[in-house]
Structures are given as structure tokens and as C-alpha cells.
Image (cartoon, rainbow, N blue to C red; front, top):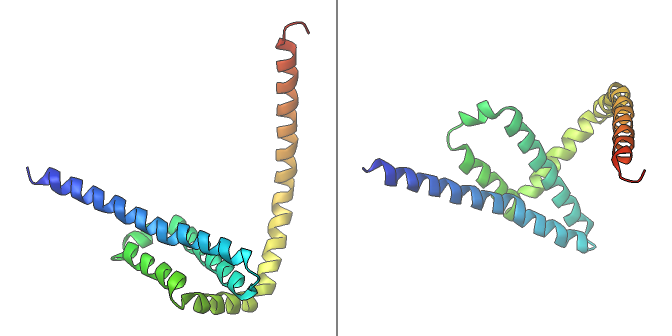
Length: 150
């Protein structure tokens, strides 16, 4: 009998925790980013751009290495704290320096790999465009032939 209320309470707490985490890590930064873009301060704009880069990197890591993050104790709370510091504390400057130094150190390799990706995916992109064009053309002619009075 005690298990059902405990389960319901746990589900509600997880839902509230997820809502607060999303609000703090996405909605507040989005609002602050729009405010920064409306201002003329390039430093603030650069800090918020850096925030989104860090956010994207962490989301990429969490998505692709979820099993690792699953075993980190209190990861959700740690993640929330990291983003809280980046948003409300001085963490933006730290992350900006970290990302800038990393990019400066690996800039040439990054650009080289990006060029390699373009070469690898160009034939696939061209083939995809060709297939989409063929599909849409066939669909259009099939649709046109089914129209009454044609």
C-alpha cells in the first residue's frame, strides 16, 4: 500500500526536476541570448554564443555516451549546478576561455576534418538531391494524372 504513493511522489518529483532543469538550462539562456543579441555588447553576445556551444557539446556527449552518465552519481544535480554556474555565475568566462583555447590549439585539424567531411558527404548529398527530385517529379505527374478533367 505504501509503494503506490511513494511511486507517484517519485514520478512527480522527477517531472518537476526535469521541468526546472529544462527551464534553467534552456528557457532562461534563450531569453538572455535574445537580450544579448538586441544589445550592442559583443562581449555579452560572445559569452552567450559560447554557452550554446558548451550546451551543444554536453548534449552531444550525454546523447552518445548515456551509459557513462547514467552511472555518475547525482549527474542530474551536477549538470543542473554546472549550467546554473554558467548562466548566473562566472562560469561563462571560464567556458569561453576553455573553448577558445581548445579551438585555437586544434583549429587546423578541425578545419581539415571539416573539409574531409564535405568531400565524403558531397556525393551522398548530390545523390539525395537527385532521388528527392525524381520522387517529387513522379509524385507530381501521378497526382496530375489523377486530377479530373486532365
